[in-house]
Length: 73
Image: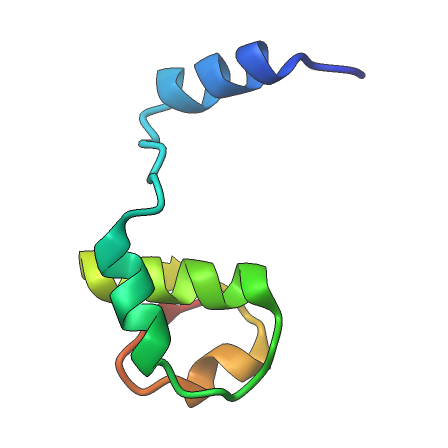
């Protein structure tokens, strides 16, 4: 099934999720983030969760290495 990006965005919002933009304060946190692994997308969602004081839901084992990250699975 193909879904347009507009339909995907609307579905995300209609289900109560909030899109989180990348802000400069996230980049500030990124500069201080430990370098446990190099995946740029993972590192970005980690710093967003830390900066916004959100819980990241993942079972990815490298995420447990980040001590300031509130992580659950």
